[in-house]
Amino acid sequence: MMRVLRPGPGLWWRWRRNPLRRRSDAVEAWMLPVVGALALTVAVLGGLLASQGVRSAADGQRAQRHSTSAVVLADTPVGPASAGRADGDVPARVRWTAPDGAARTARISVPGGQRAGSTVRIWVDARGRPVPPPATPDEADFHATLLGGLAALVSGGTVLCFGALARQRLYRQRMRHWSEEWDRIAPEWSRGTL
Image (cartoon, rainbow, N blue to C red; front, top):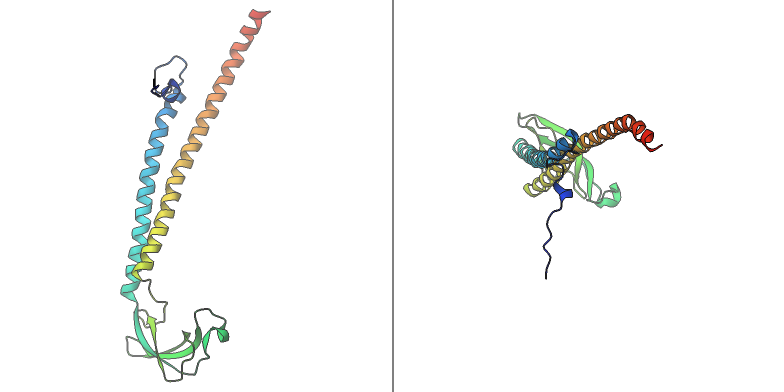
């Protein structure tokens, strides 16, 4: 014969009427599901807001940055051995035309082995200043997922920590009340046993 397991009185005792149940027990009984629901809600909202913020920032970068041709002004050394960089880019002086028509020059990273007069693609902002390339849609999705998950963990975890602190305070309050009651009752008990 198979025995059916049912939740015992220990699981729900704080919610049932009981002469030993204190007000702090009832508060704690209601606090646990409320804090859990609040933590879940805050985690979801925090994750979604962070994810959306990263995606909109990446979209803004793609809208504000554009690539343009730049002319390398001097020969560049070949490969990462000369600059110690793994990607093979080396610093070089280049010249390009800004959106306002002005000629600009700057020292930026270009692929190694370029000859003077060759052209390279660089990224510039609306003012014509060199900037890093914007994140690709796949990179933006990865960063949005990563930061959204992190924001969800932090925001939900923060609510749970505050809930744990409130529960600890209730526990201390309960212990203080029990100690006060014991100090009041203990002399009567010890007198009756002598």
